[in-house]
Image 1: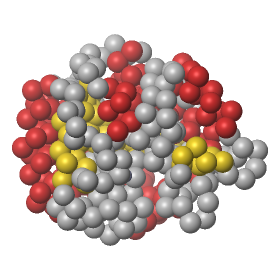
Image 2: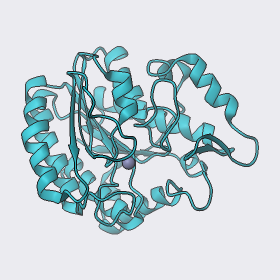
Image 3: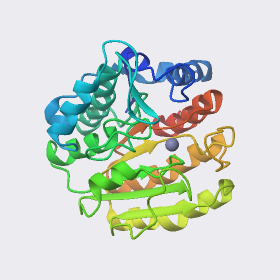
Length: 307
Ligand SMILES: [Zn+2]
């Protein structure tokens, strides 16, 4: 079965200013590497629909959703947080980003594809129930996981977060929710300085020191994530796929290399192949070194698609 690749041109029209690292060229860099690697032609391409209010409201209070919509400017840029801003194109982009994750979930659970990658922005894992922060507005992965649980009736899903920053928003939405297991690695101490103070029992948080590198990352995955995932037996997994732990990415200092992203994808896929028929939805989070981002996404998608 195929791997879906879901994106939308509206995701390029969210613009937080010419010097902001979370920039439209990130998605073009992914497209370029997919084409030059020769794998783009093997993916099933879809345009992201708009997420509905009902879908967003599974993860966020309606008042918060309305506050974000009301903040969208007709021109210029409006900041919701020191590093999170809206431009005239942002509102549609946030709906397409969450809508991509929902479509991916539907395609996988309806058996139309085996798995899916959403090449979207803005990212989502720092968005808490009611706060935009860290370049994020709505929590795309949480919206998708809740769609799988509440629309499709799944009972156990796992969130896998290998972004270099702790996914505090996803933790806020899912802590103590027994239907969800979240496993993550993140540089610590580092933005957003969360994830280490008494995490809930359904959170497998593995803080890693700056400079950790491939061996330490792989050890954390093998000894902490995989046993927890094997015990939990997820029916489906959702990747918060951030590529900012890459050695070429100036955002942080985790020193991963391209091959680590293929490796971690293979390790997690082996678990969900057994427990959940290989059902995976992966959604882009961070990754700001454009060439490294594109190459690492190719490694990730090659494993998803068996390419
Ligand atoms: Zn990040």
